[in-house]
Length: 75
Image 1: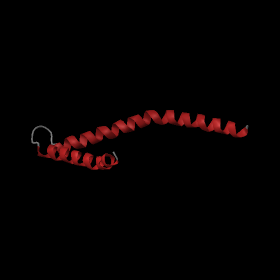
Image 2: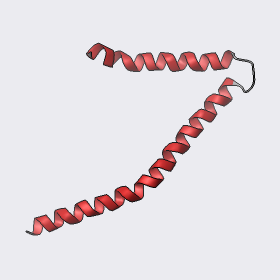
Image 3: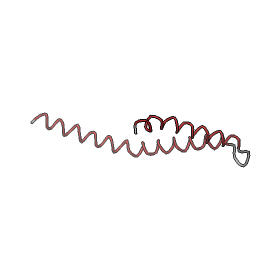
Image 4: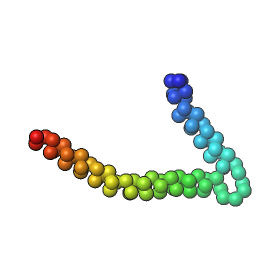
């Protein structure tokens, strides 16, 4: 099991590099490099949107936690 866990990053890298090299060799439609850049851009935008939605909620939860811990410390 441990060997599978340690080889996973290597296998993921090899799969991704094979995927991107296959995109580079494909001459139909959009360039593989353009598609790769667009996919990365979409992924970054998705992370930014999710973080934007969660940051307010996380800040609110943190305030509740710290307020409760201060009240417990007084008791």
